[in-house]
Image 1 (cartoon, rainbow, N blue to C red):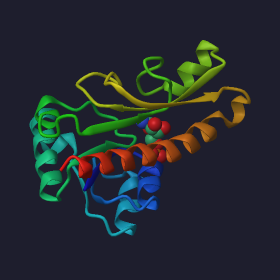
Image 2: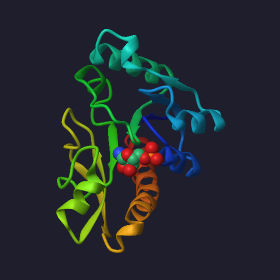
Image 3: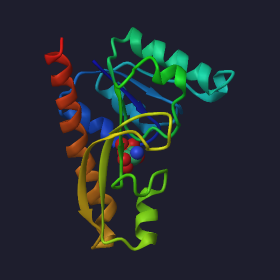
Length: 182
Ligand code: GRF
């Protein structure tokens, strides 16, 4: 079972749902995330874990991890989740958290990867799916796909199209290998 963490639009969540992957829970850090609407429309349990409701980030992460476990989650996918995860969450899902990022990491980590790549004038950027550790977009890379920058006007759209194909493919592979390992 897969748990997906979201903060925004949720187009990557939608790609996982459309690929018929077993998403059993969706958690957001903000209640206005459109991804929550997508989850509920698909009949998937969805909840918000905002920082304002908890003493600190570590406590929020602990409560969120427990809620995911209660929903049978074994693999966590960050799909546009804009907070760093703390140790109490990471230690509950060791080696079982992945993130999708719109650059060829380690180039252009952080929240402005596409703008940063454009500003740097690179000819090629891309998409990375990687394991998550305590750093900002720093865990080991699982898969990458290059995307040429030109024409710039369609770069965002083309990066998202690659994300929507690459993320479900990687997640499907991880689900299969965890079933095979049992
Ligand atoms: C994606 O570009 C993802 O790579 C990045 O945040 C964006 C989220 O988009 N981490 P969405 O919410 O999945 O539509």
